[in-house]
Length: 71
Figure 1 (spheres, rainbow, N blue to C red):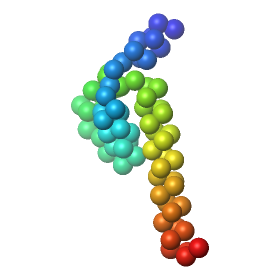
Figure 2: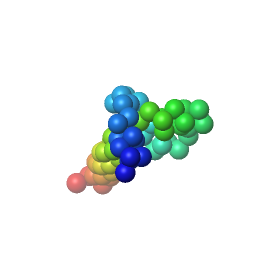
Figure 3: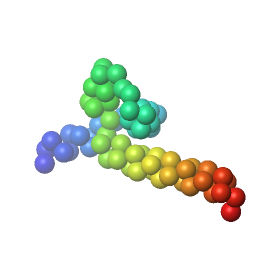
Figure 4: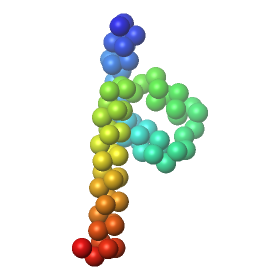
């Protein structure tokens, strides 16, 4: 349980977390940047931003399909 507490106490900025999540969507990340992110970002924040980013991505795709289909 102590290990979980240490991970949750990490203080990464919103911009760093968003950047890490967006790079993970793209699928390209330098090893040094990945290691820096793993040591500084709060995993709960990464999870929340990841779910929100995925929802926005799906919403944009649905919007594009709706425009193309013409409904």
